[in-house]
Image (cartoon, rainbow, N blue to C red):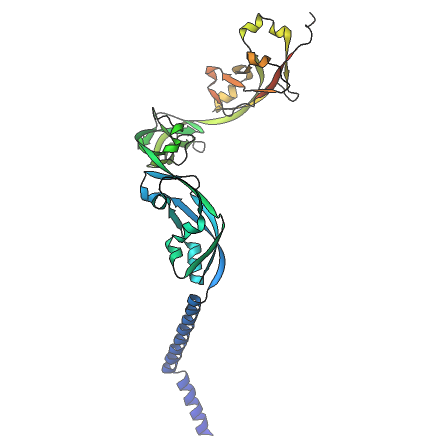
Length: 352
């Protein structure tokens, strides 16, 4: 009996010995490696079909700045693909781009099959991934436009929310802009100046501000490229701009001849039933000026013309013009709502 106990104790000692532990770890490592290889093999050789949403960037980078893409350049696309899991996950994380300048050249290319464009990309030429089809959009219209370059265009700071105290510096003072040829009708090359918007509403008076801000293309121009795209604007904040509302009456201005030709004995001025002939004006300026502002400092009016005498049952719409006394030092923050009216010919002369 004692011998059996000794043999059992020796076997246990050998089981948990250093050599036994090393051998156990080595065996477990081989099992893990083999298991991993089995999973990798299965992933590489077993395919699945999935619907994937991607974003396709359409550009003209190969042309430098001589051409640009007009319109939507980041296009969400829903596709159906077949491949192993690894390839599909790589597709989901990929940044896909199509060089339209290299593949298509200048012009408006309508109804290009999206699947055809995608199959030209390296990712879809891989044996591990097969593009089965495109759900949305099936076709794309791509506009590749040549550009006209303007160098040494000055940049000005377009500040809002406050007024600067002293000079404003912009660095660099001049930039280069590449404007698509199709947009040139919206640009006056003579005296062309670009704007860099600076919002001062969150800065205190006396604060030194130094910001990197984007340079905006001319209003209404799409597809333009500015180099550099950002400039540094430095200034000292003076008075901050505040806003207030002020209710004022609407006055009428008419041709002087109407005083002599009896116009007002023949016509009545009617406002639309909802028209109150007053307006709440949104006014901007420094706080001190706004606190002093009264309706007497403002003239709001519409201008009548001879054409308004033409018979009509419709309501005429007229812009409200607003003028401030120069010493008020404020401005209109938003356009006033227009007035709706008409001139109605009287059926009989007014009783004196």
